[in-house]
Image (cartoon, rainbow, N blue to C red):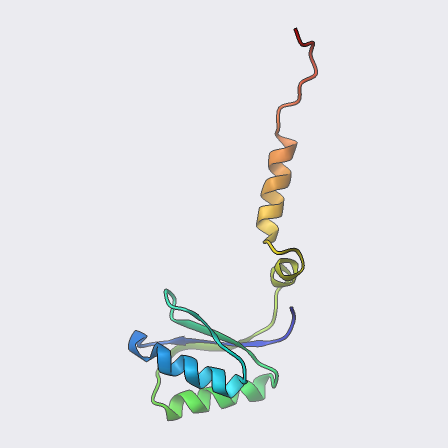
Amino acid sequence: MGGERVEVVVHDRAQLATALEVVSQCCMADAKLDEHSRRLTAPAAGGAKQLVEVIRALDDAGIALDDVGLRRPTLDDVFLSLTGHGAELEAAEAAAEDQAPVSAGRTA
């Protein structure tokens, strides 16, 4: 659930596979890839030190980045981890229940 994570956005889509391998090796865990946004995410057990290692390794591999950062879990991330679905879905379901028609009249 918790824990910091390294996120990088690779500039060149052709370098995604190599970047995925580099980030996974640096973080000693399988990085997740969102191909649409070219974003790689992996757990960062070492915090900022882990981020520096990832940046250096990607630079050594000649991989250009559009964005890089160390992210901490949000309350939405924690909620999703505990419940299995997002807080927005919970709110929408609750609102739908509040607006459901209630029959208070006689039935024939």
